[in-house]
Image (cartoon, rainbow, N blue to C red; front, side, top):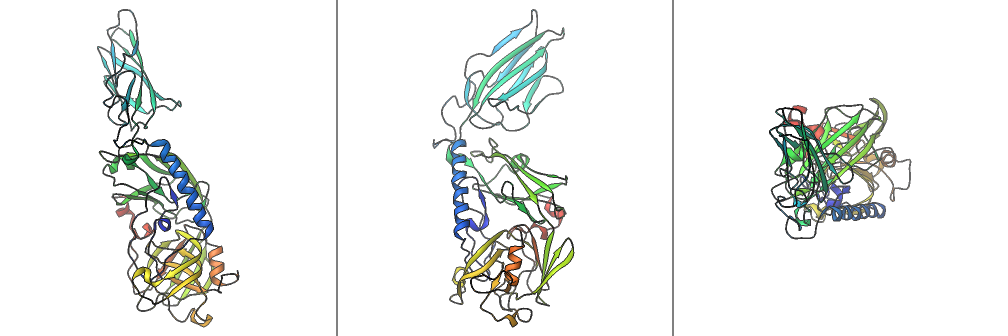
Length: 440
């Protein structure tokens, strides 16, 4: 069975209040409704994201808020020059400037001498990474400055005789309006544990035209260390994964250094934070459309096998490796949501686990006799397991599978007459070759 996508379905963690990415397609028919607990969590996350956005964004309609927007006016810097020193240091923007752009405005240069030391520090003590040019004539930051932040600059240059000139100044960067802020919706929680197939997905509320700068500002690191690469599925979505599944126990951190990064000519990134999570035990499953069996593997060895019912001849199930992207105790499955008329409307489908944005699920099925499973494919594209109405029996196959699965576990469908699921339909990048993944 399938469902239409909603923003709550596709993005579990929101930094701001924007929508998720559009569904990758519509198949079958079900509308997923979160339980009260899920809705409460999402509301809290959205509220927290709005508060974070308020701290980073201004209320003006213009992209800049107050101050000297060109960053070139202000009082002179404080300078100290050794007797007879010929060296001169120039800092732009000028001392006391406000409304300074986060990219391209900060420049330090030396005349009749070479820069020997440059330190740029935010009000909270964070140092700005930068480099002095090989000829000692200039210094520039390696990335964007943060928005609405006061910076202090201390620079020293020496002349050919070794005599020094030092300069100190301050400036404050611009404060973007809310309309000029571009935030990301990401799908990982601080401190959570995920399966070995977990991919990090970020959906932006506005189009990204400076993809290289945004990609540079987002990294995913791990312990033990493995290369993790990002792939742009659109100008608003980037996903990250390693070449192979994560090793159990791996510690992973998403680093978002987007605050101040120009995502386009008129928009700025907002987030500046780390999100760390852990990879749990290894569990992957294979649903075989031909044998109508679901085989669950732990650490590569068969752990459990359950009879299943996959998509019927008119509503076949996608082939391919699919990642569990959410778990929902009860799902409202409505055929009208995907244009199948009044074929069915089952409001209390138990033990749902979403495998695609377009609505592929594994779920409990209480309305078919036990004899169906393992013998007949009756689903509208999902992987169904025997269950009881209300889902209250923990001993049913659907209940066991739900209770022993993690978001990020892999469920692979084989031998279906359907095509392989699109890598962008859910977090299913494992269906794309690594060589293609790293191309964008």
